[in-house]
Length: 386
Image (tube, rainbow, N blue to C red; front, side):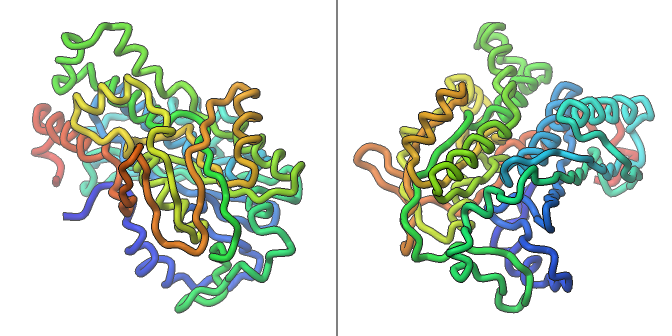
């Protein structure tokens, strides 16, 4: 059975990327593993989708908010980006989803888009008997505030020959990959991992599956866990990193964390950089609330939705980490890249183990099971093909 969420990198490369044959020369760089946005001239754009699992109203609201900020953060990885506008495509269940629920969903989406300064300019809404929970797709457009982006600093003009823009079986795609002969870069984690996932888990306290949370943990602990998703944006961290790289003529690449958490994100980033990695697991900060709720619901905390966290590969990582901390941004130097090597490893004191390829988001199977249970309990399963 195929996993919920994003396709594997292998399938994406084999059956999506290699089948694309763009004919426009002004598409400079496209979004794929570890590179979060597409670029054409001074414009950047991103499309992402999310199933809005019908666990409860609080979970739905958090899923919408997570998607909005995930798309915005993908754009922010270009550095010094001004968000412009967004369009949404929404597929609703054919039955069992009222117009009042639709109004509530659109109000949440509109509010979140206005909050980041990229109002919705349109979209498309339809119903289908093939879905049981709404599916929201969001496309957002941003413009670079100057001519040099984070991607440019990762591929400076002097290194243009090191960037291969033609893939076998897919000529002239413009998808950039790093050369393996680059120097080692420091790896920084800005923001806290699993914040958005922890907030969603805490919101499940309203469901029977989370009823025992109240007996095991205090109300303050649960409310604190639900507030873990309070820091959504990576814009300031991305802009600070770009300014630092420009000032020191350094190398920089950024990757927004989202589905699959920090473990999947590190592997994707390694693919983007074309490099091995050596990461100290003890340096990856994780909150006690995340650890406790992940254990309660049986999910992997390091593979939990992490909107609001950013991976940075750069030269002079200690100086940038200090700069981020001085700006009030939580940041930790967690490891280094190992150019010319394929191995990507975690170190934990004396133990060393290899990173695994992306395993998918831990939340989706849990939320899917709860949504299906709710569907059966309301009787809507008789009206909808599941």
